Image (tube, rainbow, N blue to C red; front, side, top):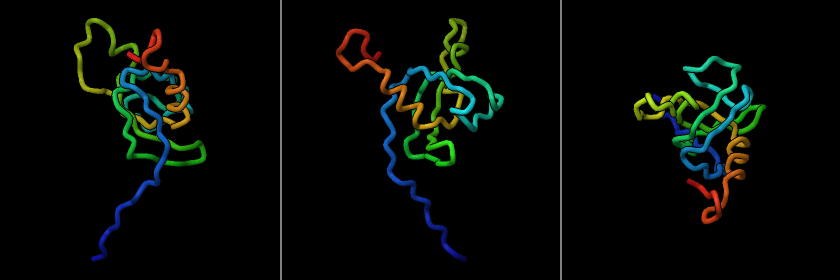
Length: 111
């Protein structure tokens, strides 16, 4: 039996995107979410970016994130719960989101 070698993902610059960052995703900016119909606009509040899982195709470089559907998971009657969405998001979208964050220590800084 032949031993399977691990697949090593090359080092990729993935920006720090703080938890609770809101991503407003056009259909071509996200992929692979089992609970949302393909081709729809999606708003996600980031819980975590999985930096060690990436994929590259003709549209660019992608990374897995987990988070919550916005605004549905933020309504008062919704109990706190673990992240309910898992999807791939293009890294360029995360870069743009990180650049929109105010630097720490400034008025309206990261929350």
